[in-house]
Length: 179
Image (cartoon, rainbow, N blue to C red; front, top):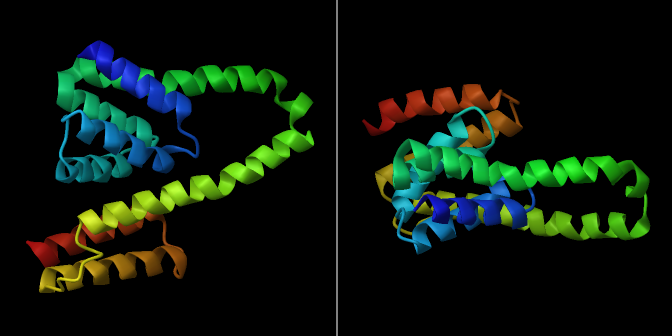
């Protein structure tokens, strides 16, 4: 199992672009496809990983690894997830200044930006849908969830509150609204 965890997360770390949020759909597909987690369990993983210090993809890999194979699984998954990035950045950093202004390199990065943005938006929509935010069944709980979503979004975008404060306030509101 540890070898499988290593290769799965090494490959995810090696081929995923756009940072942690863009990796979430890939991690989810692998974890669910291999029967390691259900969609509901993965949603909880993302909630914990997002509130924990550090990169969300590495945190997610660590929690999935722990779920599958305990502490050894967590260590193997986290290491495998970060190793490709470390090796790649180490190599690229040594030659980046030499080629960064090349038109082919600039063009490739302009092409990657929309794809990365779509991966992030896809992850957000899927996460919201699995939590009842996007639903045609408008129950009181769903309405409160949408309200809390919009309030959190306004706090971040309009009032420019710190994301950690928004998370804390949302958790407190969740206790009062849903307990």
